[in-house]
Image 1: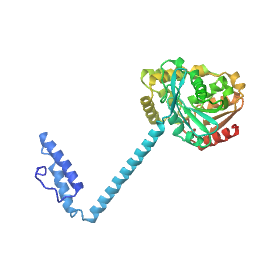
Image 2: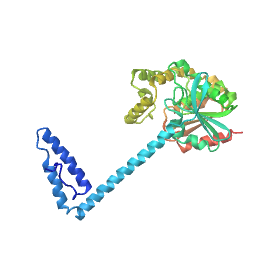
Image 3: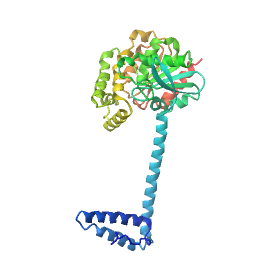
Length: 358
C-alpha cells in the first residue's frame, strides 16, 4: 500500500520519505522474488516517527542533530580530500617547455631569477612528484633560477625501450639543456637516481658545474653485486609484477616491512609509468658507474643529503669516504622518501648553494 502510485507523502519530512521510498523499493523487489517484502520495517519507521511526535520529541531531535553533524563532518572531510587531491594533481602535472636532446623531446620547468640551479629527479617519478610535492622547487626559486627536468622515459619527456637510450644519456641531457638555455655553469642537485646521474655528470663535465649534490645516492666498490637489485627489478617489471624488489629493499633496515605501503606504491607506480621503459632504465644503470679514482680527483664542490634510516646511507658514507670536496648531511630518522622534504635538507641546500654562488 505504501508503494501505491497515488499515495500522498506531503505530511512527512524529506529524510523519512527517503527511507520509506528505499524500503518501498526493497519491498517491491521482495515481492518480485516471490517473497512478501519487508513491510515490518516500513511499519517500524512509521511507528518510530509517530513515537517521536512528528520529530518534536527532544530525544529524537538530539539524535537527528548528531546524525546531521556526522554527515556534515563526512562531507567536510571529503571536500578537504578532494581539494588536496586536486592540488597534488596540479603539482604532479606541471607543464613547462620542451627542448631537443639529440633527437629526444624532453620536458622541463623553469622559474625564478639569478644563478641557475638544475634539479634532476629519481627513478619512476617525475619533476612534479620529486621537486614540487616537497616544495623544494618553490623554495629555491625565491632566490635562484630553478630548472627541473623530466628525465627521458619519465613524466612528459619522450620514452624509449632500449637500455642504450638511457645511462650516460641522462647526464648528456643536462648539458644539452644548459646549452639550450645558454647557461655556462649551474648548480645541479639530484635525488635518488638523479643523485647517481649528477655524480656521473661531475666526472664527465666538471667544467660546467658550480656545484653538484648527489643526494639520496652513493657509491660502492662492489658495483656488480649491488646492481643485481636493479636487474631483479627490471625482470619483475617485464614479468608484470612491478617494482616490488626495489620497494622492498628501500624499506628502512631493522624495521618491520610496511607491506601495505609497498603494495600501494607498486600499484601507483605501475599505473603511472610505462613499465617496459622503466625496465630499460634499470638495465642502463651500469653506464652510470663511477670509479674510485674519479671521485678522489673531484674538484667540484659537492653535497650529499641522505636519510638516517635510508638503506642507501651505507653507500653515501662510502662515497663520502673517497670523494674529494664532498660534504655529507644525514637527516636523523628519515628514510628514502622523507629525507628530501625535511627542514634539515632544505637548510643544507640553502647554506651550500649560498657558499658556492659567486
